[in-house]
Image (cartoon, rainbow, N blue to C red; front, side):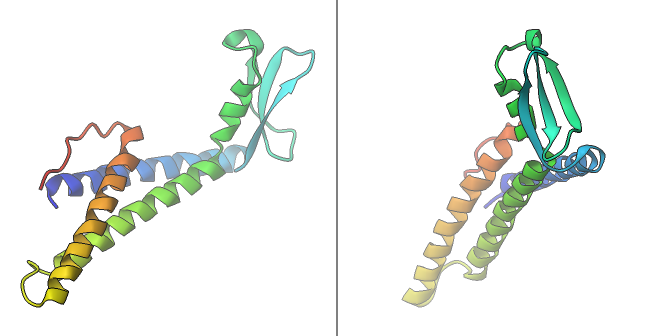
Length: 149
């Protein structure tokens, strides 16, 4: 596995650090869990801190949609969900790094049939986690070429 995978790990880790930082600031300022709702008669949709009256966003219905899904969409991006997503993607990075270390541990696969089999299995896991790593980076605009090494 080549330099490009290392670059993706660095790229994704930096993006996750930034998302985590922003989510923690938002959670401190507005609360960690949000919910969306329509305000009857008011013509607006609000995303609120779950279980409170604190409004995170108040969107006039004419500002782009007459559908309460706008507030629900904003609320769905609450800090708690963002932090859970960050942790899930960090787990992908850890699994990739573990798979890479295991593959490298088996050397060139020479030796006993068991060693060759273990290296082949490790390569399969590494390829799977490498693909997951690239996919996890896509929403952040990685724009990186596929690693063919």
